[in-house]
Length: 202
Image 1 (cartoon, one colour):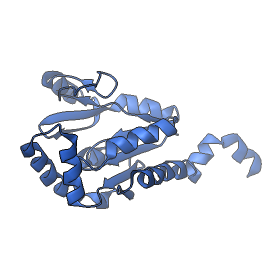
Image 2: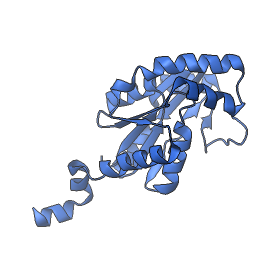
Image 3: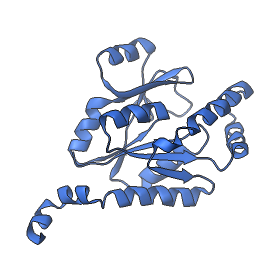
Protein backbone atom coordinates (compact mmCIF):
# COMPACT_ATOMS: atom_id res chain seq x y z
CA UNK A 1 0.00 0.00 0.00
CA UNK A 2 1.52 3.32 -1.07
CA UNK A 3 -1.30 5.83 -0.68
CA UNK A 4 -2.09 7.78 2.48
CA UNK A 5 -5.44 7.42 4.20
CA UNK A 6 -6.63 10.60 5.93
CA UNK A 7 -9.49 10.51 8.40
CA UNK A 8 -11.01 13.94 9.07
CA UNK A 9 -13.52 14.21 11.90
CA UNK A 10 -15.37 17.09 13.55
CA UNK A 11 -18.64 17.83 15.30
CA UNK A 12 -21.41 19.17 13.10
CA UNK A 13 -20.86 22.88 12.40
CA UNK A 14 -17.10 22.93 13.03
CA UNK A 15 -16.40 23.56 9.33
CA UNK A 16 -15.16 20.12 8.31
CA UNK A 17 -17.02 19.97 5.00
CA UNK A 18 -15.82 23.43 3.90
CA UNK A 19 -12.21 22.67 4.85
CA UNK A 20 -12.25 19.34 3.05
CA UNK A 21 -13.76 20.90 -0.09
CA UNK A 22 -11.12 23.63 -0.21
CA UNK A 23 -8.33 21.13 0.44
CA UNK A 24 -9.47 18.92 -2.42
CA UNK A 25 -9.64 21.90 -4.78
CA UNK A 26 -5.98 22.68 -4.10
CA UNK A 27 -4.64 19.14 -3.72
CA UNK A 28 -5.78 17.11 -6.77
CA UNK A 29 -3.73 14.11 -5.62
CA UNK A 30 -6.15 13.62 -2.71
CA UNK A 31 -9.44 11.88 -3.51
CA UNK A 32 -12.55 12.06 -1.36
CA UNK A 33 -14.19 8.81 -0.38
CA UNK A 34 -17.89 8.96 -1.20
CA UNK A 35 -19.89 7.30 1.55
CA UNK A 36 -23.16 5.40 1.33
CA UNK A 37 -25.97 6.89 3.40
CA UNK A 38 -29.63 6.34 4.17
CA UNK A 39 -30.35 10.03 4.73
CA UNK A 40 -32.31 11.98 2.16
CA UNK A 41 -30.38 14.18 -0.29
CA UNK A 42 -30.21 17.86 0.61
CA UNK A 43 -30.97 20.50 -2.03
CA UNK A 44 -28.22 20.52 -4.65
CA UNK A 45 -26.80 17.11 -3.72
CA UNK A 46 -26.52 14.37 -6.35
CA UNK A 47 -26.28 10.61 -5.98
CA UNK A 48 -22.71 9.45 -6.53
CA UNK A 49 -21.26 12.93 -6.00
CA UNK A 50 -21.83 13.90 -2.36
CA UNK A 51 -23.04 10.44 -1.31
CA UNK A 52 -24.34 7.15 -2.63
CA UNK A 53 -27.95 7.42 -1.42
CA UNK A 54 -29.51 4.06 -0.53
CA UNK A 55 -32.47 2.89 1.51
CA UNK A 56 -32.17 1.19 4.89
CA UNK A 57 -32.73 -2.32 3.49
CA UNK A 58 -29.92 -1.95 0.96
CA UNK A 59 -27.61 -0.56 3.65
CA UNK A 60 -28.31 -3.49 5.99
CA UNK A 61 -27.60 -5.93 3.17
CA UNK A 62 -24.21 -4.28 2.65
CA UNK A 63 -23.47 -4.61 6.37
CA UNK A 64 -24.29 -8.34 6.22
CA UNK A 65 -21.93 -8.77 3.25
CA UNK A 66 -19.15 -6.95 5.19
CA UNK A 67 -18.90 -4.40 2.38
CA UNK A 68 -18.04 -1.51 4.70
CA UNK A 69 -14.66 -0.48 6.05
CA UNK A 70 -16.64 1.48 8.61
CA UNK A 71 -20.25 2.35 9.20
CA UNK A 72 -22.17 4.26 11.84
CA UNK A 73 -25.57 5.61 12.75
CA UNK A 74 -25.48 9.40 13.07
CA UNK A 75 -28.52 11.51 13.93
CA UNK A 76 -30.83 8.64 12.98
CA UNK A 77 -29.22 7.92 9.59
CA UNK A 78 -26.63 5.34 8.52
CA UNK A 79 -23.31 6.14 6.82
CA UNK A 80 -20.71 3.68 5.50
CA UNK A 81 -17.45 3.51 3.52
CA UNK A 82 -16.76 0.88 0.85
CA UNK A 83 -13.92 -1.35 2.02
CA UNK A 84 -12.94 -2.68 -1.41
CA UNK A 85 -12.79 0.76 -3.03
CA UNK A 86 -10.49 2.13 -0.32
CA UNK A 87 -8.12 -0.84 -0.50
CA UNK A 88 -7.88 -0.62 -4.31
CA UNK A 89 -7.19 3.12 -4.27
CA UNK A 90 -4.47 2.87 -1.61
CA UNK A 91 -2.82 -0.03 -3.41
CA UNK A 92 -2.73 2.09 -6.57
CA UNK A 93 -0.91 4.86 -4.68
CA UNK A 94 -3.86 7.24 -4.38
CA UNK A 95 -4.29 9.44 -1.30
CA UNK A 96 -7.81 9.01 0.07
CA UNK A 97 -9.65 11.24 2.53
CA UNK A 98 -12.51 10.02 4.69
CA UNK A 99 -14.82 12.67 6.12
CA UNK A 100 -16.41 10.64 8.90
CA UNK A 101 -17.40 10.74 12.56
CA UNK A 102 -15.34 9.45 15.52
CA UNK A 103 -17.10 6.07 15.54
CA UNK A 104 -16.10 5.47 11.94
CA UNK A 105 -12.58 6.68 12.67
CA UNK A 106 -12.21 4.01 15.35
CA UNK A 107 -13.29 1.31 12.92
CA UNK A 108 -10.89 2.57 10.24
CA UNK A 109 -7.92 2.59 12.64
CA UNK A 110 -8.67 -1.01 13.60
CA UNK A 111 -8.04 -2.09 9.99
CA UNK A 112 -5.66 0.69 8.87
CA UNK A 113 -3.60 1.69 11.95
CA UNK A 114 -1.42 3.84 9.70
CA UNK A 115 -4.40 6.09 8.86
CA UNK A 116 -3.71 9.76 9.61
CA UNK A 117 -6.36 11.16 11.93
CA UNK A 118 -7.29 14.86 11.95
CA UNK A 119 -9.87 16.30 14.37
CA UNK A 120 -11.31 19.76 13.73
CA UNK A 121 -12.52 21.74 16.74
CA UNK A 122 -14.62 24.92 16.84
CA UNK A 123 -13.12 27.90 18.71
CA UNK A 124 -15.99 27.80 21.25
CA UNK A 125 -19.40 26.27 21.88
CA UNK A 126 -20.99 29.69 21.32
CA UNK A 127 -19.44 29.92 17.86
CA UNK A 128 -20.52 26.36 17.09
CA UNK A 129 -24.11 27.24 18.01
CA UNK A 130 -23.94 30.39 15.86
CA UNK A 131 -22.72 28.41 12.84
CA UNK A 132 -25.40 25.76 13.21
CA UNK A 133 -28.15 28.36 13.50
CA UNK A 134 -26.75 30.35 10.56
CA UNK A 135 -27.30 27.37 8.26
CA UNK A 136 -31.04 27.85 8.57
CA UNK A 137 -31.50 24.24 7.54
CA UNK A 138 -32.37 22.70 10.91
CA UNK A 139 -35.03 23.30 13.54
CA UNK A 140 -34.13 24.58 17.02
CA UNK A 141 -34.66 21.07 18.32
CA UNK A 142 -32.21 19.59 15.80
CA UNK A 143 -29.62 22.28 16.55
CA UNK A 144 -29.89 21.59 20.27
CA UNK A 145 -29.44 17.88 19.63
CA UNK A 146 -26.38 18.53 17.47
CA UNK A 147 -24.81 20.74 20.15
CA UNK A 148 -25.30 18.05 22.78
CA UNK A 149 -23.81 15.45 20.43
CA UNK A 150 -20.87 17.75 19.67
CA UNK A 151 -19.78 17.84 23.30
CA UNK A 152 -19.76 14.03 23.43
CA UNK A 153 -17.92 13.78 20.10
CA UNK A 154 -15.19 16.22 21.12
CA UNK A 155 -14.22 14.01 24.05
CA UNK A 156 -12.65 11.68 21.47
CA UNK A 157 -10.14 14.27 20.25
CA UNK A 158 -7.33 12.42 22.07
CA UNK A 159 -7.67 9.51 19.65
CA UNK A 160 -6.40 11.59 16.70
CA UNK A 161 -2.92 12.47 15.45
CA UNK A 162 -3.59 16.13 14.64
CA UNK A 163 -5.99 18.78 15.90
CA UNK A 164 -7.00 21.92 14.01
CA UNK A 165 -8.98 24.69 15.71
CA UNK A 166 -11.12 26.24 13.01
CA UNK A 167 -11.29 29.84 14.19
CA UNK A 168 -10.04 31.45 10.96
CA UNK A 169 -10.84 29.43 7.84
CA UNK A 170 -7.71 30.44 5.92
CA UNK A 171 -5.38 29.43 8.74
CA UNK A 172 -7.22 26.15 9.37
CA UNK A 173 -7.01 25.29 5.66
CA UNK A 174 -3.27 25.97 5.58
CA UNK A 175 -2.79 23.74 8.62
CA UNK A 176 -4.74 20.92 6.95
CA UNK A 177 -2.65 21.31 3.80
CA UNK A 178 0.52 21.15 5.90
CA UNK A 179 -0.54 17.82 7.38
CA UNK A 180 -1.21 16.34 3.94
CA UNK A 181 2.03 17.61 2.42
CA UNK A 182 4.22 16.55 5.35
CA UNK A 183 2.74 13.06 5.42
CA UNK A 184 3.86 12.51 1.82
CA UNK A 185 7.46 13.12 2.89
CA UNK A 186 7.58 10.40 5.52
CA UNK A 187 10.37 7.91 4.98
CA UNK A 188 8.11 4.91 4.33
CA UNK A 189 6.12 6.79 1.69
CA UNK A 190 9.20 8.21 -0.03
CA UNK A 191 10.89 4.79 -0.16
CA UNK A 192 7.94 3.44 -2.14
CA UNK A 193 7.36 6.44 -4.39
CA UNK A 194 11.06 6.86 -5.22
CA UNK A 195 12.28 3.27 -4.96
CA UNK A 196 14.66 3.57 -7.92
CA UNK A 197 16.27 6.73 -6.57
CA UNK A 198 16.72 5.19 -3.14
CA UNK A 199 18.36 2.15 -4.76
CA UNK A 200 20.83 4.37 -6.62
CA UNK A 201 21.66 6.70 -3.75
CA UNK A 202 21.66 4.42 -0.75
